[in-house]
Length: 206
Image 1: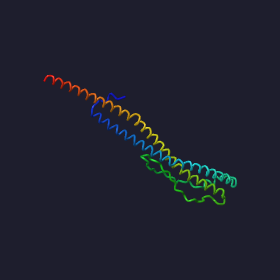
Image 2: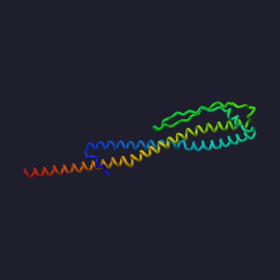
Image 3: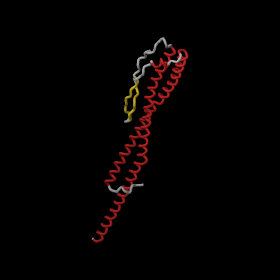
Image 4: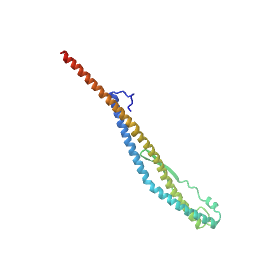
């Protein structure tokens, strides 16, 4: 239904047509942005599944090795405490269609045996290596999953805005344009009829 508060003037018609064109352009851009972000997500989905499978397998190997190390060495919590804290993880950002995507990176430290060799054995060494591998895989997974989460949020927002433009804003502009166009055409017909009547009266007087 046309907005009756919109006065049927040529100036308002021109302004509404311009606003409608901008809204249609905005819809096209939002729809294009949504499609680009969806493609960006699709690139990562297979990689996420692959990483999760790798982490599951590696975790299983690591825990089995840890259990075997505990069995052969006794409780090894004191050995585990000798492993240094890893603070090599950092976060930077990149932009995809205006969406800030976090990039999680890890500066892989050189593996050093910081625990006493006399207390450890190959089972413990293997468990240590497996948990290091799990950490590397987890950093990669965190990087990709954070990207997908941000992209999915952006897609939802883009879809919401695109739907609002398509289903509310643009139809309202079109209805108001139709209302003003018809009102102006009716006014022109009335003016034409009035001029015709005036001319007819003048012709009769002559």
